Image 1 (cartoon, helix red, strand yellow):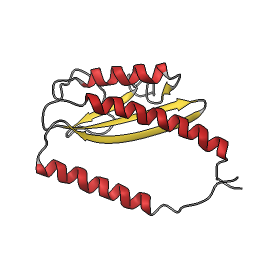
Image 2: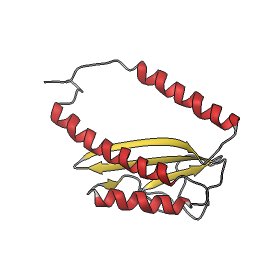
Image 3: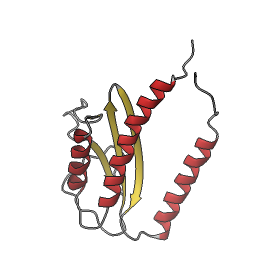
Image 4: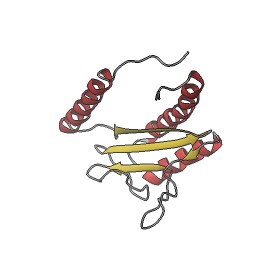
Length: 147
């Protein structure tokens, strides 16, 4: 049994991934001092819906079903934070996790972004974690898919 994907499957996975990437571009443009996490959530949710995709996180069971398309955590907040009235301030760092299902295939990515100017310590944290991610990606075996 092989776990490799066909070119057609890879193309459909890519489509879902592109929706996630575009949603992240929208969110990135909105990560500025003075905006609420709910405003970012609303823009991402509308974009996902307009692209005939489904938000992966919305409605996930818990004590209450997860209410949003985007998990947004600010500074010390643990991952998978719920967007709401929190206003982003200069110097914050915000983690955005967005996942979608499109035509039966999923895309999901999390990114941490600075809000305006951040401290050297916070920038070092972002640089080191980005470096660790790049090292991990470089070590993934490169393989061919079926033709």
